[in-house]
Image (cartoon, rainbow, N blue to C red; front, side, top):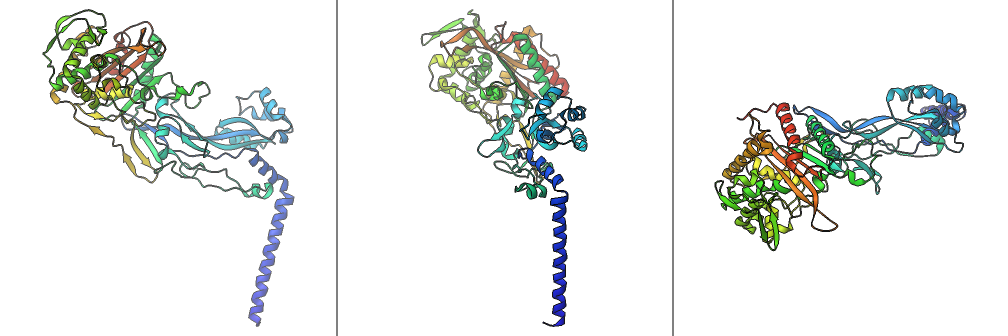
Length: 585
């Protein structure tokens, strides 16, 4: 070995010796001099159970001016927790904390802080940053604050059934959508959850090892995974929050007046299928479901339940008769008040005969015998074919989970009585959203749209996907659409509430429905329980909105015209003013 090599070796040896000395000094400082301090930090970190901070895409409402507001988002705050084993003076500790934790009384705090064999007690969740930092600055023995995240719904009950809920997937311990849009778009909204973060102190002193997942969108410690499938992103809904709030208000007022078992409504653009508002009662607050006693409260009755809808089916029956050529608007028929089919008797709502009258009176007076007469003249196979084309027999494809299948088997080769009862909305059952879609065929010129609540997806990579839901048709001739609209406008102008809700500057098409409610125990129908329904669209000849309302077993009134005319008129007036819809007459 020459002199240069020996010198190089000495330098390397000296460097290694210096590094070793620094490491020994550092370890001595960490483990001996500051050991207790670091051990306390490690204990504090692991006193709290390992819970991952999660991230999830945002759901937005969209205002009439395309201003987006958060409907469901991830909120951040702090959990304050205790290690009772480390608390030396519970009373003074409480006094120091009471300024920041006003929701905890002295008795509760002392009970939690004096458990001798307990090393972890949760005190307060979702504390704001400023208060949490102030508590941390106090450096109270046994008191700690850890960051936490949670799903927040700023509108509380607003559109709760449509937004839905998240929950834990038991098989994977991941957060997934359980109801509503949270479930339908879980593949877009979901993010891969992060494990609990850990630092060198915990690993060194506690003998624990853990992996750390870096922060994704939102910077809250969650990775930017993509849930079950697809790319991660946010969703922008068609729900207009002001309209949604007004619909909820109208439903609450109507519920207060008539005390139905259920009540709900839909406001939709009949041309595109965009649902501007959708609500039902009873409802819940997804921020706090502790008061919910039955999981069925989370179901969306507008989508997941089917009902016999009553006379709002008659405009579709009339459309079938006119479009097929079985009748014309100028046709007449002999209304006998009652008729017997397959040994079963059906009657008008009052049992009275009207004699020879025109088609208009079937809708204006809501005559069951008239609807049955024209349906039978149309023929069962033609009647079934048209109702299928309106979408009555199938699901709508709405982007919400658990859509119910309509019950329309009576239309499949049905007897005369089956066709007759279906013509006025008994014997077949449809969901409210399915009924709104079917009636939109008359409003929009004969097309079958797909009701939906999402207008676009904003992906995390910056791309935007606009909604593209199917629209088929036309299934009615333009002349038929015009003729039925004319008839429904006359219903509003002359017959409904004796013409008192007619608007001098706007054409409105509308029809009420009153259906008997089936008795599941004794069979047949209850003698005194009814489902009330109401639909209308406006301006009638170039409609901006279709409104559908229903309530199950309202108390104190038999007919829908008594209970739902005012709520509909209030909603229509609000929408006309809010959107500054131009007069059409």
